Image 1 (tube, rainbow, N blue to C red):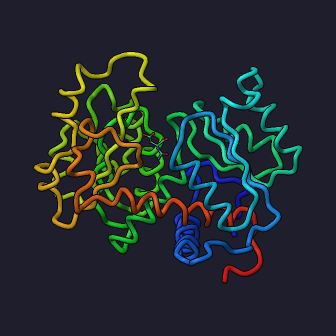
Image 2: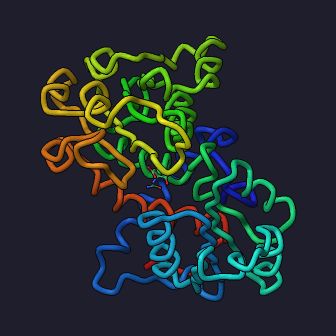
Length: 315
Ligand code: NCD
């Protein structure tokens, strides 16, 4: 069992804890291929999905994960709850805690929102994405997919390319992969590379590399992880045109050819086809985008199981 009450980020997890989550996910994965995709492990536990931002994959897979473990899962979205009447995050969350929820999975536009709740609530808190800060379950499902394909998380060249500035996925993956001593190449246009990343590289972490050249990032890469351009978080223009962006920072077949012959192409979704990734690459033989989605269910089952102290059989 994890020694934490909550899962707030990757930064404070040890390699041992990460491996425990991945190993648990591996053993729970098989439940999803049974004719009856359900085990009684979390019977009587209540999981609440509290999403203040749009989501398809993360929210659905938390719901499926909870249901496959027999938990009761309730979904709350900001637009249909009292949030639209002006209720604060803290009042909403305390209300849910008073109904004896066991776990609140929260996505919020403000960095640190889940951390604030974790101090106030008895329920376990899982961060499903807080602003541009962290998205730990995404990094864990990415690690699950990488380990499945590459049999290791160590010594890899991983190129993370795109809108680094607005990406909680980039940050959580950077923490995770460098803990395991893989080399992470962050690649973005100068306007989309945050100063904090410079500081992280500048602090002498030998596993973090920054570049504005896509060619440098992809050459010899074991993994290319593309990030969506997060137009909804941009109040100003960060590049002259979408066409120019995709010419310099879009993944096409020619660029895939510069990577290792057994490269895998990842993307957390949703994808902007023709912007950061060409359609034939997204749907092509190197793409593991849908494997990532499948891994998301197993990893989120593992997290709920480990946090809520599942008992009983998983047979
Ligand atoms: C990501 C997110 O919300 O941070 N998506 C996801 O969870 N699969 C990335 C994105 O929205 O681009």
